[in-house]
Length: 114
Length: 112
Image 1 (cartoon, each protein chain N blue to C red):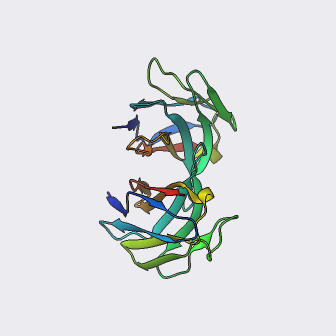
Image 2 (spheres, rainbow over the protein chains, first blue to last red):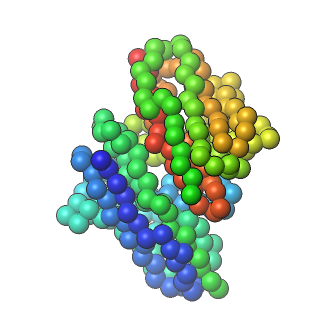
């Protein structure tokens, strides 16, 4: 079946630091890959996505590249802000008929200190 | 941690009918979310269902189409009413417990 592995954290950084949250996946097909962000008390929000190998998703200064050779989709941001404090979920979606349509990582709690 | 189960895991339904999806959690949780993911799209929040209050729906989703029940702290249902092929999606239940989120296995719905 499909699976997603990401660091759980918490990850604590100072403002303006460089961020990397690793995400690797296992999938039988050719999934789409997503990063979602969840702020306290709120539902998930899509941060970025990539639908095929070598695609780069980007949004709000965050980037992630779909690396099929390393089965990875690491999230990066060059300079984090306090407002980036949240939980980040890596996910894959195999809506092409696979048994595991949606698979999430366990989430990475990010804390940015001023 | 929280373990979530959903029923049914998948279903094929005819247009105009309704389907109720059940979400069962193995522990008591306050916050519960219902999402859907249409083919080729990202996850979209339908509503937030907290026990003891009416569900809060996101823009584009209404109670008549997606009625939700939350009778206790371990269970919720989402009904997809008067279905059309556009409702074909994966429907996902999620809970927040002790600042962590957990996801159900999803319900794959196909409307013909």
